[in-house]
Length: 80
Image 1: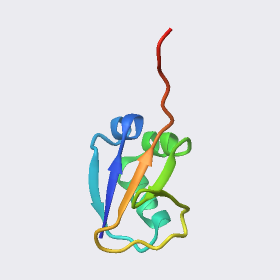
Image 2 (image 1 turned 180 degrees about the vertical axis):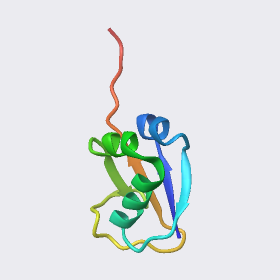
Image 3 (image 1 turned 90 degrees about the vertical axis):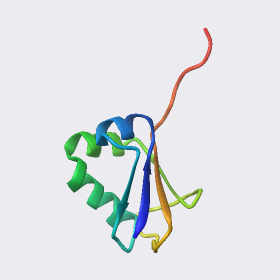
């Protein structure tokens, strides 16, 4: 089972910052998360970077027990 970590707007859309999902690929983890959290989460997901164990990845990457899939939305901010 992979650990799913959600940040910023992805966390807000899902209503949680972390979950555990049983899937074999990053794409499977994300598909299960969309089913669990709904269309609002899916909409946010389209703008996010996805990382597997601290490195940017793609949906075909394999995941196993203890792997971490992180969903990182774009951020903005700074000083004016």
